[in-house]
Length: 187
Image (cartoon, rainbow, N blue to C red; front, side):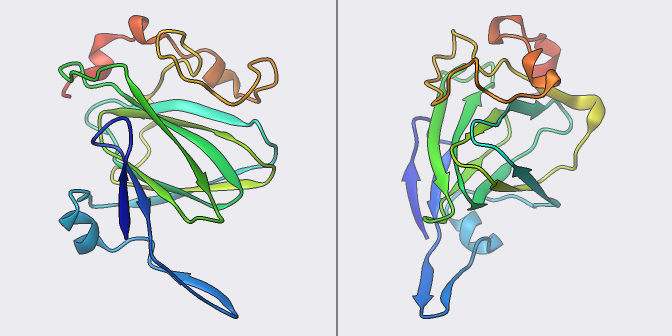
């Protein structure tokens, strides 16, 4: 695998090795020891699949508070998405900064997002699927979010805000400056 840095050193773009032939390709998408040797150790407990029918579907920015913070390894086995991670660690010198990458089935690229970061994406093609490996199960009582288009974050989303397809819940997330501090406890 190849690793590429993002704007946030803890968030990594991962390019698994693909073995192509006339039938298609084979790629190893997760191998615990190999990822741990690259500083991306996690005990993944759950895999999630999100199917997005339309381009400009926007999900996020999501996170879970303690004790259910999640490390995520995410890729798009079908379609393309613009993906964002925001540093929410209060003591971090990069608090409130973000990294963005494009994930596409054609490249097989992944993004590794450690605990302490909000995560979200916008689909760039119809019928985009996203797979997430997470190291903590979904905890509805600790499910949190950050306003996707908070001007203080400065994220250059590739979508007209009026055309973004969002859930009602994602429309109501607070801005970074209004996040309850107990949501970030333990980071």
